[in-house]
Each structure stands twice: as C-alpha cells, then as structure tokens.
Length: 338
Ligand code: NAD
Ligand code: 89Y
Image 1: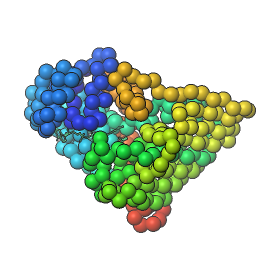
Image 2: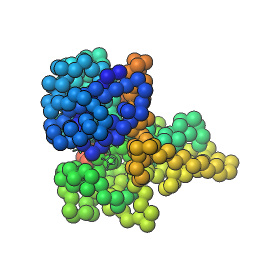
Image 3: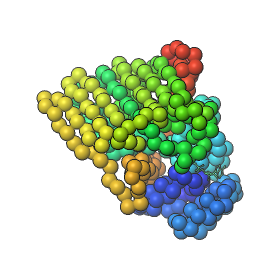
Image 4: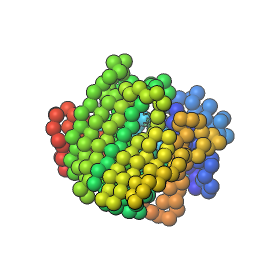
C-alpha cells in the first residue's frame, strides 16, 4: 500500500514511525504548508517526494491512501479532495468542528467507495483495550456503571500551543477520546448532562469537564476530564476505569494495573510496551498509533469497516456537541437533538 501523509507537525512524527514499523505499507510522499516541517520530516523518514499543496500531491501521486494529520480546520477540504482522488483516508481527531462537516466528509468518501477511518486511538491503547476485551468477554457480567476518568496537570500546551487558543478545549481535544472509550465499553448513549469550567486562566477554553451519560443498554457512566489536577505521581496520559457489572467489578488503576473482582481478586499488569521510538509518558499513546494504523491497513486489505470509521465517529462527535450544549444550557441533552 502506498500512502501519503498530510501535515508533518507534532503528532505526525508518531504516525510516521508507526507506518515505518508496519509491513506492506510505505509513505511515498509528504505534504505540509510549512516547508521547514516538511523538509525535516522528509529527511527524518527518508521520504523523497514532498509537496506544499495537497491537491497537487493527489494529482501527481499514485496513492492508495492519505493519512491526514493536520488540525481540525483543514479536515473537510482535505478529506473531500482525497475522496475526489479516489483514495482511502485516515484522518486525525477531532474529525470535524461541526456535525455538518463530519457528515459531508463521511458522504464524500462513501460516495467514492473508499474506506474512511478516524484516528481515534485511545480505545486502541493496550491497557484500555484489555479492559474493553474483558468487558466484551463477559468477565464482570453485564455492566451497569462505569467511570472513565482522565485527570492530569501535564503541560500539553508547550507541544500543542493551539490547545490554549481555541474557544473549546478539553472536551473537543481530550474528552472526545474518553467519550469514545465510554462508547467502546458500553455502546451508544441516549442522553448526556455536562458541566465545564476553566481553572487555568492563561488558556481560552474549558480545562475541566464532568459528564454523566445514559447508555442505550442501560449503563450509566461518568466521564470526567481535567487538565487542572495536581497529582503527586502525574498520570498523563492514563485513562482510569472503574466498571461495575452484575457479576464483578473491573478497575484499571494508575500504573496500568487491571483488577477484576469476581469470586476473588485477579490483578494483571497491562502496561504498554515501550516501542524503540517511543518516549515516556507518551509511550501509551504512541503504541496505540501503531495498533490503530495496523487496524486501518487490515480493514482496507480485507474490505472491512474500521471500528472507528467516519460513520462510527459521528456518534462520538455527537457526544462532544451534546456535552457542550448541555454545559451551556444547563440541561440534559438528548443525543437525538444533535
Ligand atoms: P501541528 O500544528 O503540530 O501540526 C499540523 C501540521 O499540519 C502543521 O505542520 C501545519 O503546517 C500542517 N497543515 C495544516 N493545514 C494544512 C494543509 N491544508 N495542508 C498541508 N499542511 C497543513 O498539530 P499536531 O499537534 O500535530 O496535531 C494535529 C492533529 O493531531 C490535531 O487534530 C490533534 O488533535 C491531533 N492529535 C491527536 C493525538 C492522538 O492521540 N490521537 C495526539 C495529539 C494530537
Ligand atoms: O491532543 C490530545 C490528544 O489527542 O491526546 C492527548 C493530547 O495530545 C493532549 O490533550
């Protein structure tokens, strides 16, 4: 498979490492408007052909897919251009700023008969995946409660300065992953109630969000996120889980320790491996990049719909929209409103 990467910024470096680790795929061209980032990435990964214009690249290259690693504002024009060029697409989260844009992108790639996957990678983190598999395999029986929690004081703004500038921050950037984990564990939600606040006055958007979800299958979940939490051992970027089922309880604690309580207590170390190119504490996220890109290749090869397809991601994005609406209007929002 021949692919091209669009957007050679902060996070794309992980994606390039992961593509290099995977068999049967090669990134043959790169695109970025920023010539410095473009040339540095081309040199680091030995990619010969570079472009500052995505349309020009799509017209010149014979590609199977594009990997879009730009920030959200550029996603719709880039995904639509990729659809016109008839290539498969993997696109970073947040997929879109509006449901209208998201639906238009899904329709465009569907109309071209190609695969569209959103790089929604937190559910692919190996520790989170272990919990998802255990719940899906019935390890605790039918779940009735879940808490999915991400609380940290890690400075994310130095690597990603745009996070401090947007009107929206934590739900759109990070909560989106945690809401997606809730969906992976408990299925879709029917309604959500959310509160948000900003503690760090140096940023523009909210850095704390607390959300209560009612899921179609009867589970109630609490999804809480904060970048204003001081911890003596910083847990970034770990997601902490506590899930009660009719036959047992599952916990994913800080330090990647998973405990299943059911006729006794079973503790498992579900730490992610430290890939050769990865760096702590990001190694957890970095490994999930490899796993989700592998999933994308498998789906394209087998003609299957990815777990986090564009179509699937509409429901995660709807939760994001509904959470903002709930917090703004101080009311419970039905997902059917979105
Ligand atoms: P960044 O600003 O460092 O990099 C984006 C790059 O895209 C820049 O170099 C910019 O010049 C380029 N670009 C923008 N529009 C372009 C266009 N139309 N054509 C060509 N190049 C264009 O951003 P980042 O921090 O790498 O984040 C990129 C995306 O990755 C964001 O959506 C972010 O939310 C996401 N992200 C995901 C994870 C994850 O775990 N999934 C982690 C961090 C960031
Ligand atoms: O952009 C975010 C993401 O997707 O994962 C963590 C992050 O880098 C900062 O919140």
